[in-house]
Structure formats: C-alpha cells, structure tokens
Image (cartoon, rainbow, N blue to C red; front, side, top):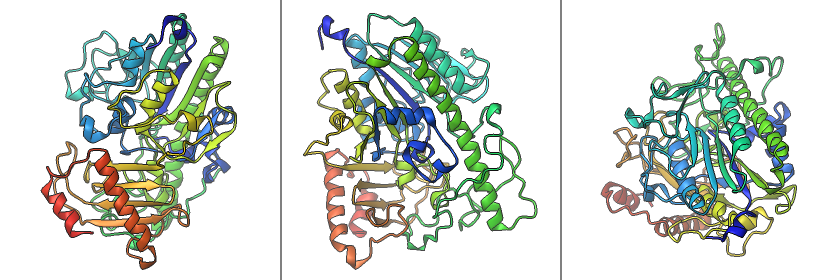
Length: 507
C-alpha cells in the first residue's frame, strides 16, 4: 500500500483483451497473414513499446484462462477448469487489490466467469458470450442472472444496446475515460467478445478481401501419422480428411451465419480450400473491427492527456487455429492455441521496438500488473512479475517454461484431455484421454499417448519425436521437468487412480 502522494503518480493501466485472437492475426507478429491483412493500431503499440513472442496460456479455453489471469493461480487451485466452472466471488484478484489501494477500476465487455465481478467500481458486461449485434449488458447494480451462470445472452434485466458489439464496448470505455475520477489512477478492462466465433463482422468490412486470396499454412494438409494415437484422429477440422468427420464438425459445409459457402460441384480438396478462405476472411474481418476500435481508444487517451502516464496492454485469453494442422478453434496445447499476443506500451519506461522471446504465462499477468502499480504481490500467487522482461531485461533466474492442461475431455471440439510443458527448446505432451472430474468433459476414454516436439528445428510441430532414439536425452529431461513443475504447482493425481495407473503404464 502506497501513501496518498505516491498514488497520484502511479500509472494508469488499460488492459484491452480479445477473445480467441491469434498472434498470427496481428501483423506486428509478421506471420503469413501479414501479406494480406494489417492491424496498424495494434502494431503501433508494439512499435512504441514491447512485443512478447512467447506469451503462453496454461489452459487454452476462455473461462479458465480468464480466472488464471485475474488470480495468478492455476486452474486446479481456483477450481475453474472448464467453461462451466464458476469463479468464487471471494477469490482474491489483482483488480480487487488495486481497488483497495486507491485505483479507480472499471470493466466493459466480456466477463464469462459466471459469478458477479468484484473489484470494479463500475462494470457493464455481456451475459455469457454475448452477441455481436444489438447486445444486452449487465450493469453494475442490476440483479445478477439466476439462469445457468449468466449464460442467457438475452438476459431480461440487461440494458439493450443498438449496434455492433466491438463498437459499443469501445464507446463505453471512452465514455468512462472522459467521466472518470481524475484524482485517481485507473485500471480499465476493455474486454472484447471478438473475434470469437461465429465471426459476425460489421457490414462495413464486407468487401475487405474482395479479390484477395489468404495464404494457406504449410501444414493445412498435414499427414498426422507422426502423431501419437492420443491426438492424431481428433479435433475439429477445416477439411473432411478427419477419419472421425461423421462424428465432428468440419468447416467444409455450406451454412455460415455470415452467408452461404458455395461448394456445389467441388471435390474434397477444393471444398477444403473454399472453407479455409471463408473461415479466414470472416475471422480477419472481425479482427479488423478490433483494430479500428483500438485506434479509437488510443486517440481518446491522446485527447484526454492520458497517454504519457498510461500503460496500454493488448492481449487475448488464448490463441486460435487458423487452419494450422487442419484445425479450427483452440483448446489444444499446440502453438497456435497456446500462444497469446501480448503488446505493451509505456512511454518513458518501455523502450520502443522492444521484442522479447522470454517465456511468460498468463499465470504471470496478475503479479506483473501489481508490480506495475507498485503493490505487494500476494505469496499465494503462483506466477511471477515479468516487468523487467517488458523493459528489455530477462532475469538470470527466469525459468522459461510454461505448464498447460486441458480438462474438457472431448467436449465441443473433440479434443482429448491432456497436459504438458513448453520450453524454448521443446514441447512435451501427455494425452491421458480421461474425463476425470471436469464439469464439461464427456464420458468415455481415448487412447493415451506421448508427444515431443523439437521447437528449434520444428517450430510448427510437424514431427513428433517422442519415440525417436536420437531424442532420448531431450525426452528424459522433458519428462523430469514436467513432473517437477506439476509438483511445484501443486497438481495432485491421487484423487485420480486411473490417471496414476496410466502414468505408470505409459512411461
């Protein structure tokens, strides 16, 4: 806790967070998509500050990731493992700490944690996922929804707004900035629904890609025979090549909420190409809406004289597959889902054009934001501040490792339960394929399997080398580090004897 004189000098903190925004859909990350799609306002944050190239999530699904970001604690600690789990209102979060310390706090947009927000002086949030057009908002002070954890998008006590959700959320943020208590520093969350599916873009962007062909990823046509049996035949795909395609969704279908996909008379590969173009163009149009509105927010900071003392962060709750490995959605531990964009600007503190490849996780967000504000980091937070990394200096004892676990076995997008670690050199994954006690898991088992990827020579994860004798040293080190980290994080397998036996039988 700082004294009153110091409080006036503390930086304002603006956190802009998207839902399912892949790093490759931010042109500052220089992916294949940067050839045809630009995000100039997001890029300006990176140009004027820092871009993190290895910001990773511990669970690539919305609700658990958001709980980790707020608390600095792992999913198995908070109990928020799946989309249906409710975050305890008594859980300590960094906004509550900053509010107590004198920050003026506000939240606008997507919340999706199923319990009423605490730690915010003002909020206006979407019920559940919300909708893209003419959304309702739950205002602070209104009755909290009694339906299933607030998942009713048409919450009857909500305030109906007219227009496009990304524009409306930004309008709310700008209005609050202009009317805020000027004698206090602020923490403001601008949390977009976009670009979560169904990718309903604004009509103004209908013609954004006329005559443009979106480049395909090299592994859109991946032969997954190198994979373990734990993963190779699962997941929701762009194509119809998945052997389980009769049981799961593919994108090669004619009906989209944004209009028909004409696949009449096309062969299977042609349908895949058409579906990929439709999927990517709709998704990127929605991302364009975010970039435009980030520009509006940055302009507002300038107009209000707030730019010099405001740290601006842009991130997402996880990544997204944009055809890589023939996948859509997220959930998997593979790079495209695990990587989160993270761009930050802090005039006078962060050197413009800084690029860091240190591994940081969403577990580290809460300690970092507290550190930025000069607040003490609670001892039970499991993450660590990466403020020095943002300033261009990696601490000598930085671990450069991230643990990831997906609990929602086979739910929604046909992804088996798994856990693993990611370092700069490799990724190790164990697909244990059991539903355990996750609220959103489906009954039934899938085959167990181990996978190991050499990220130095195979950054796109196209060759599983777990059983390659040449990688025995890497595999043994990775397995040892995985179980050491699980122990450090407090993961206890004893309630799951079937998992314990699997681990014993599948070294």
